[in-house]
Image (cartoon, rainbow, N blue to C red; front, side, top):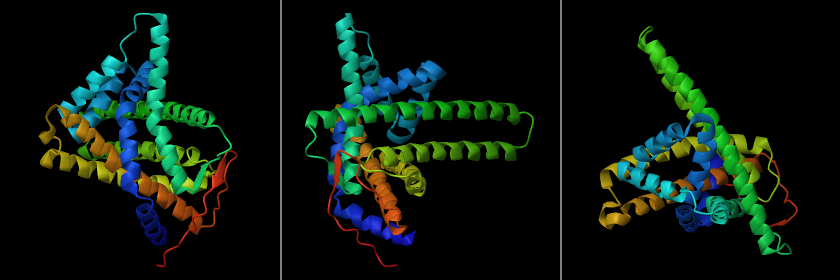
Length: 296
């Protein structure tokens, strides 16, 4: 584990995480409205739009503050407004879908760098882009259904907590809170596992991603807590006026992306150390960058 962490840190720094996270943040700003519209539409169909809106608002408020949460809600509402004609509606849906997949397509390029592969030059750029967007949209749908399951389980635990609070001791309530936190960690781990397995243009086995996805989920939760403290005390967006919320989103996505990319580097390093060699898919070629294990 320590050897993988050292190798991951070295590779993470070599691949310039600041440049990669900046690119992801740029795409995230333009993808955010479409991404939220798609997730709210899919998840809201099963659990109700009020429930998913409340969950998203609570998560954003806890990290970036109520003002940013309100501004994101306004952006999402405007993006999902009905169009005046059928063709405008169709164009709107296509635009939202393309926008929602932009940040995931950029993540795929970054993960290709981690796994030392690149798209085959013989394949047309348009075909490569379409494949990346379809894959990204598929992952969005998968994450939406993972989120549905998480919300259903969390709702059940909340209902149990309300019933238990009047009948049983506080220790059982604490156990339910721990269970809820573990479920959130499991959902994050599964999300990262899906990303690490399916995004790189190389064959990745499930055994290669589980440890790395759990480590990434733990680091992500720790980073989210630290970012919440930083945003709440330093208020880095306060000097930008009306653009402050956009700055906070850029900072949050940038820092979070660096954590996820480190988790991907750890996943790759752990896989290499254990001899779980990967091979490029059709439509991709291996980049000749030697893996340099770090001595313990």
